[in-house]
Length: 262
Image (cartoon, rainbow, N blue to C red; front, side, top):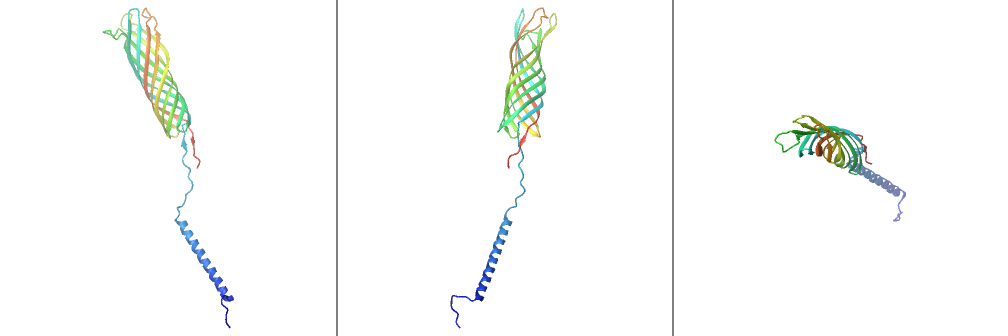
């Protein structure tokens, strides 16, 4: 009995089904192995670690400072017998405290600051520079200095360069010491006001502590100052003085830190 071509028996159909199922299993196993091998080659991602917070200069701060000042005092004296003009330098140390506030927007830092310095800025010279001997000496001493200023800074993370400008005050004590009869010393004092300009650099080291170096120029203009009539006459004095100071500051601030969004 002959079999017609093109048609399979039941046995043949069963064999083909088994072969198809075996081939599918082999292909699936190969794909699974290849996927596992590819996954093994990928780097292992660790747990997410948030970046460190960004430092901000925004906040209120207080601190202390110490430094030195160099000033120039110009005096014009008028008496019944003479009119003299002299100059003398006044130098010394100063130190005190400060309080201020900062607000940072982008790299710019704006703020305001007030400082008060106790000083030993002192200078003496003859009141008559043309005389062969010192008959009358002039002495000036500034026992405190104060400023109130606006600040503008540019920050590079924890380092900031700044400028400041505002008003300045000083308390001066003046003496005229006579080495001729009646050998007296006359005194006068005043609180002067003027303006100031400063610049410096500040760096925040750790926590909320920072340190800075600052240069200030102070100009107290020209003022008239009467002395008491202890010499039998009252000398009239016109005084002009300016000062430069360099100081080192240390501040503690209530600054804030913000964390960037991951």
